Amino acid sequence: MSRISFKCKKPPCLFVELAQCHERQKRFSDARKYLQEALRLNPVDVVAMNSMGRVSLDEGDMDTARKWFAKVIEIDSSDYYAINLMGQTYFAEKNLVAAREWFRKTLEIDPQEAVALKLMGKTYLEEGNTVEARRWFDKTIKIQPEDIIAPSLMGQTYLAEGDTSAAREWFLKAWEINKKNVVVYNLMGQTYLIDGNTPSAMKWFKGALEINPKSAVAQNLMGQLFLMEGRPQLARTWFNKLLKNNIKDAMLFNFMAQTFIMEGNYEMAGEWIDRALKIDPKNTIANLWLTFILIKEDKLSEAKKKTYEVISREFSIPAFILLFIISPSDFKSVIQLLEGGQQEKINYLKLADNELELSDIFEREMRCQHLLNLKNLCLGAR
Image (cartoon, rainbow, N blue to C red; front, side, top):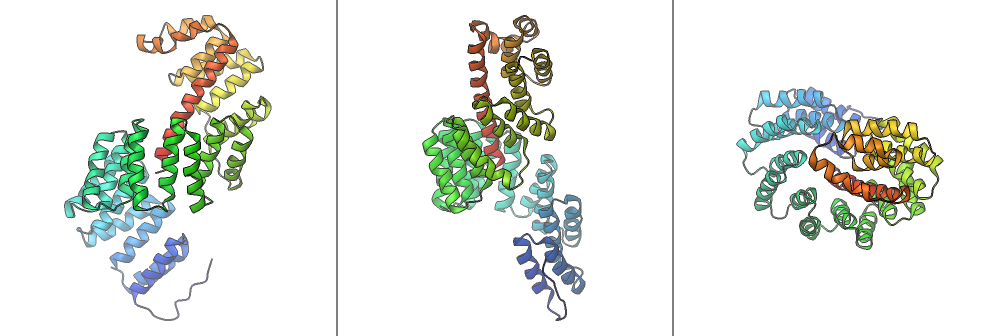
C-alpha cells in the first residue's frame, strides 16, 4: 500500500481524479483516502460521493454504497448516475425487481441512457425472460450501434434458448466492433463447445488467451474442452492453472473429479468430490458422481441413500439411472409416483440389457448435464 500525503492543498476535483485512478487499479483503500480529503474540502461534492459509493460497490459492500448514493440523490434528485448506481447495488444482490425500479427512474430522466437500458435487459435475462431482454438490448443498439456489450448480451439471450447459431451471429457482430474483447472470444468458443465442435472452440479460446493469458474463464473452458474430448490429463493441466490461483469452486472440483473418473481412479475422484461437497453439500453433480463411485465400490446401501437424497430434491434423470442400477424394483416403485410426462422421460431405461449399458447411459446423461452447466457458465461469465 502506498503512502498518501496531503501536505499540499489541491482542489477537490484533483483528489477525485487521483481516487479514480486508484479505483481503476483496485486500490480501494487509497481511493477512499483521496475521496475523504475531497469531501473534507467540499462536503457536498456529489462526484466524490458517487465515487465513494462506487468504491463500496466494487468492494461488495452494498449497504454502504447505497448510503452514499442516497446522499447524492438527496442533494440532487435528478442525478441519474447515482440513481443508476443505486440500481446496480440491487442487481449485484440479485434483487431484480428493486434494481429495475431504479433503472426505470434513470430512464425517466434520460430515456437514452445506454447503461440503464442494458441493465434493464440484463435483469430480464437473469430471470430467463429472453424476449423482454432482447427488447431492451435492441433499444440500446439503435441508440449506440457501436456498443460492443449490447450485441454480446443479445447473443446470450439466444444462447439461453439453446440457439447457438443465432448466438454466434450476435457475438460476431460484437467481435467485429472490438477484436480485442476477451469476453466475446470466450462466448464464441462456448457456442462451438456446446455444439461439440471442439476444434473451432479451441481456436476462440486460444484467441482469448493470447489477449489475456490469465483469463480464468478461458482456462476453465479449455479444461472442459479436453474433458469432452476424453483427454483427462490435458484437462487437468488447465484446471490446475485455476487451482494455483486459489480458486475454490464446487464446479471446478467436480471437473477435476471427472478427469480421474475417466481414468478409473475412483480414490482420487472421491477426494475432489469431497472438496466440492464441503463447499456445496447439496451439489447435484458431486452427489451423482459420488453415488456412481459408491456403486463401483459395491457400496450399494450408501449409494441408494445418496440417490434418494438427490431425487427428493429434484427430478434428475442420472439419479434415476443410478437407482435402476442399484435396485430395479425400487426404480419401478418410484416412477409409479411420478407424473406421466416424467415417467416417459425415464421409462426407456427398462430397455437396457445390463449394468454396463446402464453405466454408459448414465455417463451420456451426465455429459448432457455437463452441457447444461456449460451453458449456465456461459451466461454467468457475462
